Image: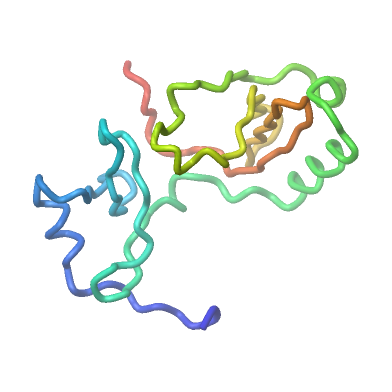
Length: 161
């Protein structure tokens, strides 16, 4: 089943749901994706990859908004970060990050269902060093680190002018 191509959704139910202001589904105009909207203030969104009505694959233009990380750059990141144990180790190897973000407690969900989410304390973002990737280094409460490699965002500027 994993190798089979799932046909696209043709039932049009997600579009009908997105047009209904009382139904918790929205369509993101930028990505073309359908999202389930949830949370008390409706700010949480979960992307729908498949139609729950017909099982068909739902559209997404997300790939067009990000670069595909270059294998050579990925190998460099892995080599540079081999055996790092702390944020200080990362800084010694990569220098200061382009951005630093602190964990925002307001992002936590109050329902209690997400109490096992692994929380980080600081995120260090490196974007300028590589042409095709963005490196996010997460510092955990115990001081250990983990990292994520992602494509760089190439879509329209979302900041207000």
